[in-house]
View 1 (tube, chains in turn cyan, red):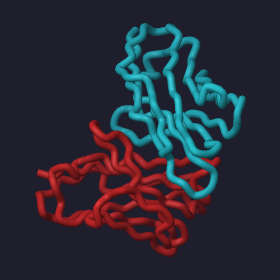
View 2 (view 1 turned 90 degrees about the horizontal axis):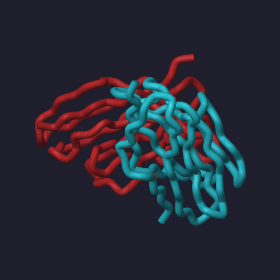
View 3 (view 1 turned 135 degrees about the vertical axis):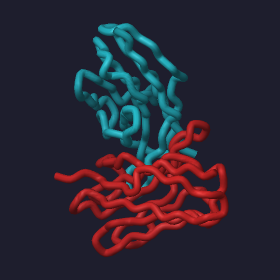
View 4 (view 1 turned 90 degrees about the vertical axis):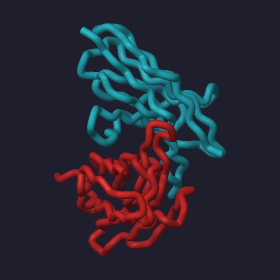
Length: 112
Length: 114
């Protein structure tokens, strides 16, 4: 079935460090890809999305590029801040009325 | 505009009891989906309602049920609670369903079964 694999956490970085969180997927069709972020005690917030190959989603300094050839959607940020500390989820959805499939999540801690 | 509202935020129930959780979607959104989040299993899809009809269902036992009203508000019910039902239950609304749009999530209801 369709699945999403994320790098295991937790990830601990110093402020202003470069961030990469790996995400790869397996899907029977051509999915839309998403990154969601969950801050402590809150629900999930959509961070960015890409709907077709080579699309780049970006928001709040985060970026991810839909790579069909490597079935990947890695999340990157050039300079993380303490406020970026959260759990990040990669997800996919096939077109039509199918549910989101989530990865296990990666906890990021940024220290000053 | 108002976001997705879930009530209550916290709930403590005893094993064997039943519980009802509520979700009010963003105005105009017709699709409401429910997810269970646990440390061990991560985010698992429960079901999705669209225009008062269940359109998709995840792999959960029949103790988990839901419904959607004509104003798109949704409820989920869990009967005969088990300790393993302790989780954060997240509701998400979408304009017309999944696909390209993504979801807007509520803050969740944290259910503790003792």
